[in-house]
Length: 209
Image (cartoon, rainbow, N blue to C red; front, side):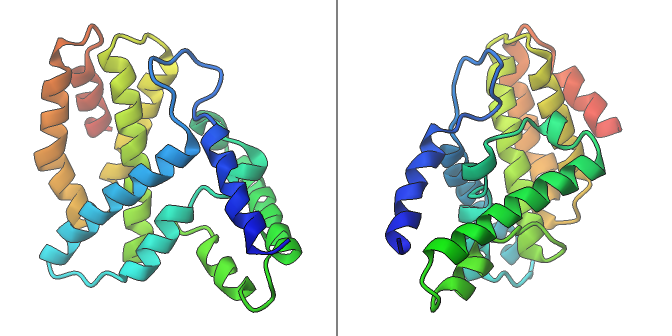
């Protein structure tokens, strides 16, 4: 019981593998993903601040570091499945949020429960921090898929992952998105030019969508 149970549960995130059931040259755990999302978000927020945007750093660190905690209970559900329909996505989110709420009620001391409810909530919203989280989350999806495509992985799912994440990012209104599209993405595409899979063509098609 108590916060010890929460700390101990974090080990489970190391054992949940993203994009299950597909051949991958590199395996990525949910725990590793969460760490990378924090790193992306940190730099994205710096870009926002250089453009005069105020960032709530405490909120940003809370929502980025904990955004996938609920996968302890439901595992990693592949993005194409998760977003197959709005109804399915809403149902999955409801189950995940319900199980997180139950965990907090069952194990977290009452004086800390409001804090945990705030920290473990769904952080993607219309706030600057929520949009940065969305971009950072999709950015890791891009890099995970890119690594597989660059090595010649012909699993169609990685093309879909890369394409869908890029489409999602380009539709988010943030200065860091403009910076990514203008300065970071071209370097990524250039690095992938020797890949047997035409990453530049996939990128151009996604940006034209």
